[in-house]
Image 1 (cartoon, rainbow, N blue to C red):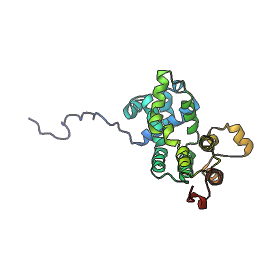
Image 2 (tube, rainbow, N blue to C red):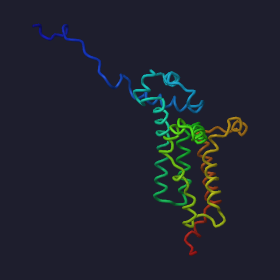
Image 3 (cartoon, one colour):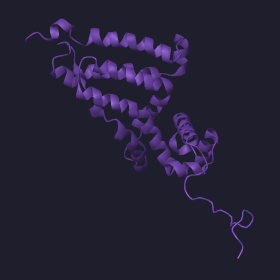
Amino acid sequence: MKPNTVENLPPKKAKVGRPNQDTQSREQLIVAARTLFVERDYAQVSTRELAKMAGTDPALIRYYFGSKEGLFSTMIRETAVPIKQQLRQINRTLETDGPASFMWTYYQVMSAHPHFPRLIFKLASLDQSQTHNQELTKAFNEIISLEDVLFFDKLKSQGLLREDVDSRCAQLSFFAMMVFPFIVPDIFLNKLGVEINPAFLQQLFEQNSKLLAQGLFKPEESKHEPK
């Protein structure tokens, strides 16, 4: 019997499981999904196109995410996680700077993905009577629910808002401040000479936080006055 030398060792079997790729491929697929799903409807984006934009093999979509739907859901979740964490913090310690703090977190996250809110807007507009649309919005609903962001009623009940402020109007104004800069058509931004980037969002936040403080909330000295 021959000894096991290098020359006569049996060929190694290919390992089953993780492909010979680093996690960069996974991130590239998420970036590609964020781009293509914003530009087009979900059904119009193929796994082949996603893989091509990411510079990877289409088989990696199944490996990392299970399916195109799995990639879509993961992209939504991972982009929205910082916002969800901030919402939890606001709901634990509801104060007058809560909405402004949430807005700043939102701006910071979206400055890296300025077109992501357009995708969320599209999801919110889908016909929920269609089963496939329900599946697409499931991931977003798991991350952020309307109940999480409707905190102006709580602020009103705690006596933190001005007496003449309607909490429903305040909530809509707050949503407009957060979302509109990211969904306004580019043609209007160009007319205004505005580019949605971190520097502009910092400036916009500083102005909007003043609008919130001076237009909706009671002055500091009046918050602790007896009713």
